[in-house]
Amino acid sequence: MFTSSVITVLVCTVSSFALRNVEGTKPVLQRTVEALFMDRSHSTYPGTCKVFVASNKQAKLCRREPLLPKIIQTAKKQAISACNETFQYDRWNCSLVFNRKPRKSIFNKIYRETALVHALIAASITHAVARGCASGELTKCSCLGTFKNSSWQIKGCGDDFKYGKRVTKNFLDLKHAGNDQIGEILKQDVNIGMDSIGEQLKEVCKCHGFSGSCTTKTCWKKLSPFNSAMGLLKKHYHHAMKKKFVNYTTKRAITPKVKKKLEKGRNNLVYLQKTPNLCVSTKGRACKDRHNCATLCCGRGYVVEKKLVSSRCRCKMVNCCFVKCDTCVEEVEMFTCK
Ligand SMILES: *[C@@H]1O[C@H](CO)[C@@H](O)[C@H](O)[C@H]1NC(C)=O
Ligand SMILES: *[C@@H]1O[C@H](CO)[C@@H](O)[C@H](O)[C@H]1NC(C)=O
Ligand SMILES: *[C@@H]1O[C@H](CO)[C@@H](O)[C@H](O)[C@H]1NC(C)=O
Ligand SMILES: *[C@@H]1O[C@H](CO)[C@@H](O)[C@H](O)[C@H]1NC(C)=O
Image (cartoon, rainbow, N blue to C red; front, side):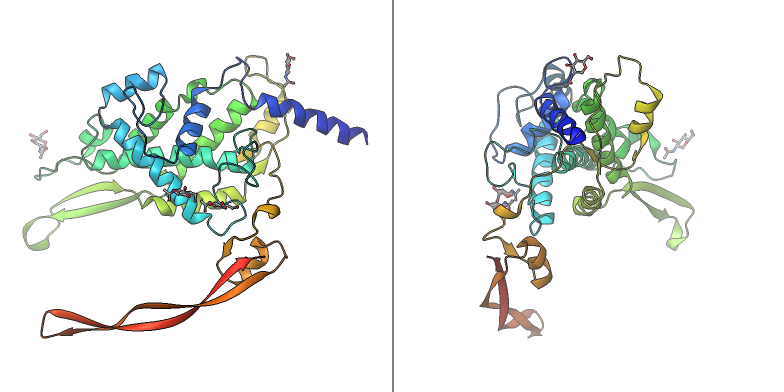
């Protein structure tokens, strides 16, 4: 009885605490992640960053790299659409609020979902910046000088993960994410996000020389499509660790006990509050198959409808150059939660 009431008190203090850090304002990290994830339009905003209302430091970064706003826009879109797609058949489907209640924003507290979104936005910016290096859109990438000396002149550079990570840390102002537990947690989630991009780097090499002899070789790093990092992030989401709320600031001495608590689960996404039960909001949701319906519909059952879908099939090349196809009609089952 005693412990449960203590926990309630802690949860209450956290709910108002999560919105601010100890200095009383929301850090740039949180403001940016929320602005990018919440805005599902293509609006442009005044200021140099255009995609959202930027801080002074962000505005400076956007001025220095004129194509950065475009890259951030790409990052935003790719994050939201990968999230929509990956979580389409999950109880939480990347919605901004829980259970369709406008007041239950995923950003009110540090839920598992909040942790995922912070990692997701950081991963997406890292990816988009690294790609921007490869395409030559960004001019200050660090990889330009890293090519092996070859007799070949290679323009631009590979996907520059290091630079992507540096820009992301700068842009999200990780240094000022807060000296409290919330700051530490969100920083860790952002790091997990950025590293999920790094884990997908592959080295690709190209040989040069007479008739395929490999006298010189040029190698560069290549990223996987963002969707494969999204798959990794979803795994992190499922293995995320709940931390106990500890009121401390890193400005105060961290006791060994607190330190030990902080170090547990360094490689996991971390969060502070339990997600509300989402079963009330899955009514009417489409599910993928019977197995998925069992979970998504929370045991209420589901409706099966048969639908005819036509598609091109049995395609053949005719008269050398034309492709001729038949139309096949297939019956597919559609599932909807009761
Ligand atoms: C993601 O889903 C939301 C809600 O259905 C929708 O408004 C938004 O356009 C989708 N975004 C993308 C990029 O697919
Ligand atoms: C390779 O290095 C040599 C000596 O440093 C330099 O003269 C040459 O221009 C370099 N070649 C290329 C393709 O960078
Ligand atoms: C955390 O502790 C500080 C100092 O001990 C106190 O002023 C503050 O109100 C506490 N914050 C919460 C959310 O409990
Ligand atoms: C998520 O599900 C809600 C219903 O719970 C629905 O209104 C919303 O459009 C869905 N969003 C996405 C991104 O599919």
